[in-house]
Length: 413
Image 1: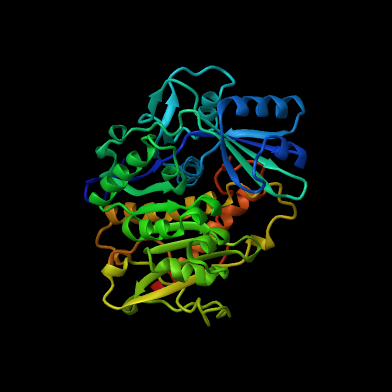
Image 2 (image 1 turned 45 degrees about the vertical axis):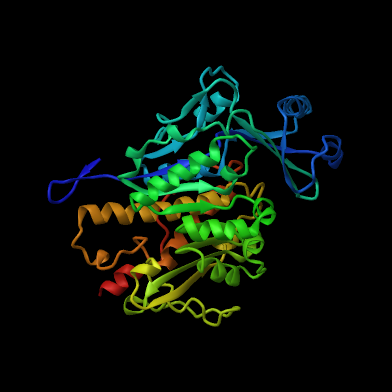
C-alpha cells in the first residue's frame, strides 16, 4: 500500500486460482513408465496408492532430481512476487494438518512470503503431487496424484480481493476435474468476480494434451471469459490447428485481447491490438515470417479491441536470450516465468495509473506499461533465469536491468 501524489492510497496485486501441488522431477527408465501403466509423453491422474508406491520407488532408487512447490499458477505468482517485490494472492486449498516432510510443508517452505496464503481453504487430507518423469530420450511423462487439490469451493473465493487487483490468473487444468469436484465452479466464480471489477482474466493453457481433448470448448471458453492468453507453440497448435507459432498467435488473437507464446528455440512471440492513431513503428529490423514484416509496430502498447477506434493487430518477437543457456536441465517453469514478467508489467501500468492518472502514459486504456517489444525482452530474460536453474521458481530477482534500447525514452523525445 502506497500513497499517491494527491495523497490517495494506491495498491495493486495479482490474484491466482490454482491446484496446490508439489512437483517431483525424476529421471527414469522407459521400463518404469510401462510398469506403472503411464502413457508416455502424456499427463495421467493416478490414485493415492499408486502415487505412494511410485514415490517410494523413486526415493529408494535415488532417481528424484528435486521436489518443489508447483502448479502453473502457483509458480507464476511466486515469480511475480519475486520480480515485483510485491504481494499476490493465491486461492486454493491447503492441508489443515501439516507435518515436516509432507507435501503441504514443502509447498509452504518453497513459496515466497510475498504470496499471501491467507485465503487458502483448509482441507482434511493431502494436497496434490505431480511427478514429472523424464526418460532417456528427453520425453516428459506426468503422473498426477490429486489428493484434495480440486476441493476448492466457490464460497472460498472472496469478492473483496478483486477491487484492487491487476489480473486474475487461472489455468486450463482447473476445469479438467472429476465429476463432482467443486474446482470448476470456484474458477467460474473467480472469473465472474474479476470481470465485474474489470480485472483482466489471464489463462495459461498448461499442456497441449488438455487442449487437444476439447479444442472447440477451449476456443469458446477463451472467447467468452479470457482477456490474456499464455501458451507455448504446441498448445497453440492444439488450440488453433496452426503449427506456425506466429499464425497460431494471430488465430488466438481473434479470441482474446493479448497473447504470449513461448516457442522453444524459436524464441517468444506476443500478439495484441492497438489503435491505429497510437501505433508505434519499430526501430529494429523488420522480420520475415508467415505474416510479412510482422513486427513493424512492436513498439506499440496493447489495448482492448473495444477501446480502439481503428483496431490494428500488432506482433512482437524475440530470439532466445543470448541464444539460450549452454545446457538446459529442464524447461519446466519457463513459460510461467515469462507470464510473471508480463503480469509485472500489467501491474506496473495499473499502479502508475493510480499514482499519476494524468500522465501521458494513460491517454488510452493500455493493458501494459511498456511496449510489446519491451515486454518480450523482459519475459525472455526472466525465462532465461529459470532455464539456467534446476527448479521452476525464481530464487532471486534479476541481478540487474539489461542494457539496450529504451523505446519509451526514444518516443518521449
